Length: 134
Image 1 (tube, rainbow, N blue to C red):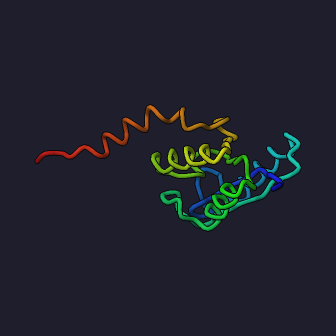
Image 2 (cartoon, rainbow, N blue to C red):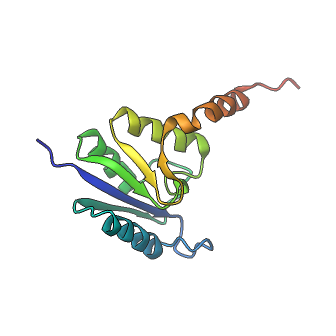
C-alpha cells in the first residue's frame, strides 16, 4: 500500500512579483497551513521562474506523476493562480485531479472543485471556438 501525502504546491514566474506571493512567502503560508491542520505527511513542490500559462512545468509534472500513482491525495496552493493563469488550463487541471481521486484546496478560496468552474467553462469554450465571419 502506498503511503499518501498532501502536496504543497507553489509557483512564481519570477521572484519579484508585486502581489507579495514570492516563493518564500508562499512556502511560509503553506507550511503554516500544514502546521495548523496537523498535517504530518506533506511534500513541497515548487516551480520558480515558470509561467502559469502552461501546465508543462518540472515540479507540476512531478506532482501529476505522484497523483497518478496515488502517492498524493490532496494538493494545497495559496491561490488558484498558482495552478494556472489561464482559466481553461486551470479548470482542466482541477478536473483531471478529481478524476484521479484527489482534491485541491486553495488557502485563499477554500476547497476547489471542477463543478464550481463547470458552467463557466462551457461558456468560455464555446466563445473561444466560435468562428467569426469576416
